[in-house]
Image (cartoon, rainbow, N blue to C red; front, side, top):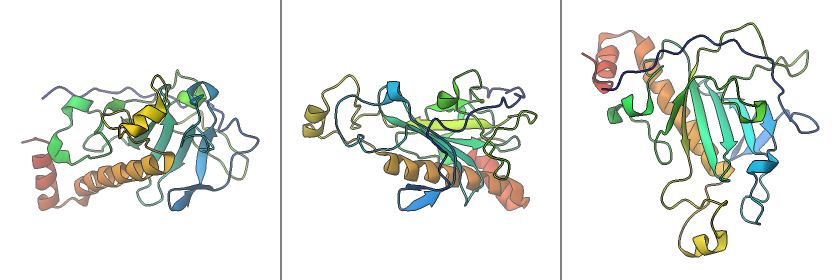
Length: 223
């Protein structure tokens, strides 16, 4: 098995939370609402041609999944497609695993499979960072700058066979040929699904029973 990476501690840099007039308190997505921690419009990533993406209000959305308490991000890529990301903390059984080190038996099954596994990308611009965002509601949106971001981010993108990639193709022809644009709502559902799967793996580890730990070790190919 390929060795997993050993991420180093990274300090959280102070970051903006939005380039909108105001960070929304609630954001409607899928069949629910989330409390956004970050929301950006990224003009360079927004397709020029009209299409099903035209009415999507943002190009980056960060939130904490209420059911799992895991941090999640949706980020439109330069190709116009969406990618979803979920962070796991140190101590999680998959923390530090490369994409090719995650065994299929772990059961991670977001759209197209896992194709991203990295530490916080703190050197990227805020609107492109895959990193934690901490919001202090009473004092206004801000990011903590003293904590250490040791989280490990897993991600996936809607640029696989059968997916409509808005930039660099003729979208109308692609639709006629059966390719499907994976919308922000669809990718939200897939991101939340990944968060649930990662949470279940972590919960098995923290359960502490011999049965749970034995099953988890078997899943990860450990003796």
